[in-house]
Length: 423
Ligand code: SF4
Ligand code: SF4
Image (cartoon, rainbow, N blue to C red):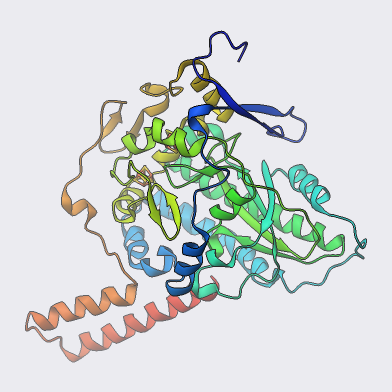
């Protein structure tokens, strides 16, 4: 942004952030006056507490696991092979995370010394692009993991995923970026936890794949970004093109504060992800949900697209903050009142393997059956199928009933393992 003469918006405030990598210079992000809302997210604390008490948070990865079982049946061979290999590579990380909170420190702490910048610098040195500190909020722990976080101080960590691969989404290459970043992240989170122990403190790892809780509200509280209309954390340098992990620790740290990057109102102007979602799974207007004002994602319309098209992720790919970074996007908005890249093939175009190229003015169509997928726990699906057979007056023969009982037992065992720890 050169000067004030060509600006059509007034800048309300400027946010200074560290550079993308350790040695990069810092950046200044202007926030136009019509984008100002509130630091972090608009929420009602009493309602957040109420819902976490009466309806504790659950994860679709357990509650609707039947759709994941189904998804595996339609994955192309190359994707299935890659996903299986990824799951194998992740097992040691998950095991390390599970016991990480019990490991004794290896160093002697320096009493009274605040560890915030020591830990932040180490995390940045290891490659994390965004690092922030906040209090762990138990209200976002999944019901099956209650009591899991051992320490109160949360270190929020975002690792950027490959730019080029992400632009090919939806694709197998995009999945390499997605799951590959989680693998690197787990390795360096282990290293960071060891470093904290060497300083004399404890550190517990919370990896996304351990399904322990919803991280984004804590990342927003730690000032690392704001929630986008695509349901993802939009951080300054790479938008939602990152993978999140967290450590909790008893090291003395100073909490960061939430920031108003202007994202809440910017998303209402932009709407590119909403317009480009092939499943029409994103909602234009914000709603109040569990005490937070946000754009909701319709899970049932998203999941079939994800399963059929390499994890989809188009809502990440078409986001201008992901593509160009928050600074150029916000500067463009101040100068022109427009959304950088909106309406262009460069930002909005994508290809679906059986539907071809979808330019900015084109969306694919799917019939109703496309969205008709199992949407419950695996054991519930088996019960429903069994009930249908009974209702159709074709009472299953003994052998089939035995098979049914075995399958239910297996599904329950699988659910128990997932809810405790992936083996
Ligand atoms: S992942 Fe795909 S289907 Fe799901 S919300 Fe994003 S763009 Fe839509
Ligand atoms: S594409 Fe636009 S509306 Fe969607 S998350 Fe990104 S900035 Fe917000």
